[in-house]
Length: 263
Image (tube, rainbow, N blue to C red):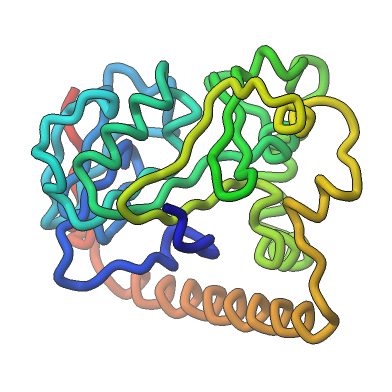
């Protein structure tokens, strides 16, 4: 059951005492994860941006997300960010994730995000339609990123350089991603047959479809969302500045806090 749409992977409802698993932590594991699994070692980096990193205090296990080596409900919370779009069988993947965890967080590129920031390694495109994760094979939706690809502009340049773009994504985060916090179960439907659902993946959206994905806000709600987003970004930017200043004062021993998994 869906419980929330967090702002990002660092705004999750995780109790400090919970045991946390991350599936596919790769080169950037969540700092809250106690155990991190990944399907591939460093000999296969085609699905991530760099070598596997294990943070201090974390346990790393090489395992397939579609066949996890854990007992039922072994973890209080499971994190999975930008992995399911790569897997062979998303339904089985979700079944395993909800088997080993009591609750968790799933994040993946949205359909619109895949058009804006296309990745050749992605097999599936997803949407959250009425609290159900709905997915289709990307090659069945149409040509994405075959002729023109502005992905680096949106993902790397605007995300890093434009405050206006950051505010847009902060106030409408599901432009680029589907963010789904769940408990007990996670509703997923792959290759839907309902034409009303499939219409989201083809052609121009109607006003009804737009409002389903981006519900209209009152002026008061819009101002509140904007103000909260502005304050969140301001705090994040100041935090980066302060952290950068502190790191520059440290010697290279800070690198001992992380380790890379050998191939």
